[in-house]
Structure formats: structure tokens, C-alpha cells
Length: 436
Image 1 (tube, rainbow, N blue to C red):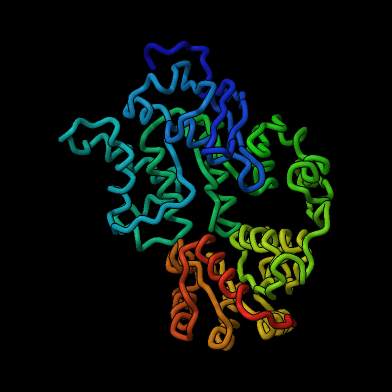
Image 2: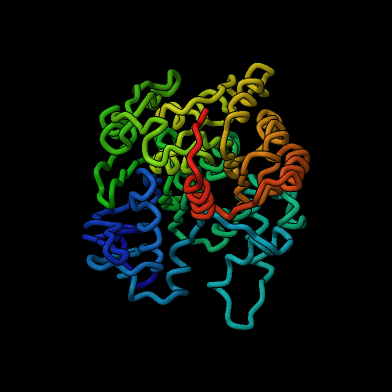
């Protein structure tokens, strides 16, 4: 990269502060990332992870401080120059065009083409090589909309890799993926860093996944950097209590000795039914971390809550346990059994509203959707529609069928958190009734 000092780190932030109106999102962040390092940004929702990434990309202008890419001030680089140095994997992307996979991957070559210049034979060779790297070589000619959600996330990664940049930024790359696809994607990203010396900075909501794959964890809290170091030094019961407000046990994986945390409960008692709005129970159906933001938000708003059937060690199950929210628990990876489903239906029978998070549906948790059918006819029910059910359906189409039946039975589609919060507030402002 001509004109840049050889010793300059790929990414450096010096005293960076960012505000949105009166709210400060980042406070005097100092961060330097070495070449070939995999750095995970961790922290609660609203801690500043996404803002930091958007600032590095130039989407957000800091109020103070500076951002450097390979020794050059970010503002001194043109958009094309930035695109040749840093690639970006957004938190959510829902492609609408059913283009061939190879053509979609080559969208990442735009920074290297003239205005009217098309893809070259060399571009296509590179594209096929990258598809092989991410395990999609046999899908090159398939339509983008015909592949599974996990494969599509790898395709988005492949498009970013086609930029051939030495720096890669990822914002919650494992959102809406099941555990198998989470492990697969992060293993591939770590391989890029360690074998190809691509520098990686990724915002990850799961602290245990960050500890397993990253070389270093940077913890943000309320816009400040509160911890920075290797996972073996960063992960602690005190950190989880201080930053997340959760009591946990620190354990070590027997084979590798890597630390991981098992959450138990909040350090301060959560609101009980009858506090705040007192409306409820609001029954949240999720899994794989998709329901966690809804559980936290509804708990903060004071709703009485219950949760659908979840598997032991699932992120949503851990959040529900920490918030003292009741729900049936099944053994990891096992199909939901008769007893668990009976308990789930008992909670549905007394729910005053049902919120279905955009969780990944597989054979082991399909029953969570099927159990809803008798109840959505009489209980206000909301289906979060983004990403679409087709992108999250790993049941050969059965989940999509059930989802359509739920809509026909009266469940309403909503676009996300804000809309469902408005709906719940409208419900809870009605005449008070006693909750079960």
C-alpha cells in the first residue's frame, strides 16, 4: 500500500468521541489493532459497538479525536480508497435480487473497476477461489435467494472478501444463525486472520463466542472502553457483574483451558409482575439469541413475561434465567418433548400478548411455532418479519407453512422492536385486568 508507513497499524482510534444529539455514544476511545489480529468488540446493547464500527467506516463523524487506516487519517481518504482498505459485513442484509452467487460475490470488486468497466476473467477466478474458501464452490451458479440463511451469510462474507482488503469489519455476524453456523462462520473468520493476515474487528453479542475465537476482547460500556486484553485475562465474574449486571460462574473448557461464563441471575432484582406497567404476561418465543433483545426491552418496560420452549445453554435461555422469566427448558439440540410442549402451551393459555422473535427454525424447535396456532386466534400476537421466515427456515419449508398459517389465524407481522413496543403500549393502556 504505497504512501503508508510500514509500521502503521491497520486501525487506530485516538481519543474518539461520538454524540447523537445530547446522547454520547463513544467517550474518548483509544484503540490500536495489529495486523492479522482478530479483535472482538463486546458489551451490552447500546454500549457503542456498532457506532465504533460505523465511525471507522466514515458513516459517523466523531465530535473529537481521529481515526487512522494504515497510518492515514480517515477523512483524507476517498470513498474508493477506503473501500480498498476496509471491507464491511453489516448486522443485517436481506438481498432481494436472485443473482447468481458468483455475480453477487463480484459486487465486492467495484472499488477496482472504472466507471464502465466490467468484471474480468481474473475477477471471476478470484470470485470462484473465494467461494471455495467459504465452502460454497458448488453453489456458484445458484441464485442467491435459493440458498439457506447460513449459506447466505457466508456469501455476504465472500462478497466482502472479494474486496481483497487487509481490514475486515463485522457487526454481529452471527445474528440469526444457529449454533452450528455460528461456529462455522467464526472459524472461517479466525482462519482469515491467522493464515492470511487479514485484520478482523467484529462486534459480538455472545461473550463466550468472543472468548473462543478472538485473540483479544475489547469491552465497551456506555461508550467507554472498560477492558481490553486476551480472553484468558478479560473474562471474569467481576466483569460480567460490572458491565452486564449479571452474576455468573467462570469455568474453563477442559480440552483447551479457554474460559467461559455461565450466567445465573441479575445483580439487582428485576421488576416483578405488577411493577411498571404491570401488563402481561407477554409471551416471547425465540431461540439462539434472537429473543434476548425483546426480553431485555420488555423487562425494562415493566411487563410481566414468560418465554417459549428453549434449549439448555441457549443464549435466550440464559437471558431468561438472569431476568427470572419462567419458561420450559429442553436438553441441548433435542426436539421439544411432550412435557416441554405441554408446559409451553400452559404459558400460552394465560398470555395476554405473544411476541415471536425472528429466530432460526430447525427440526428441534419447530414445535415452538406449531404450538402457537390455537392461541393466536384469541390473543394479540406479533411476528417479527425481518429477516424473512424463508431465510430462517431449516425445516424444508414446514416452518414457512406454519408461519403462513399463523398469519391467516390472526397474527400480525411487525418489522421489529419499535413497532412491537408501540403495540404493547397500546394494549397495556387499555382497561386494567388481572393477569394470571
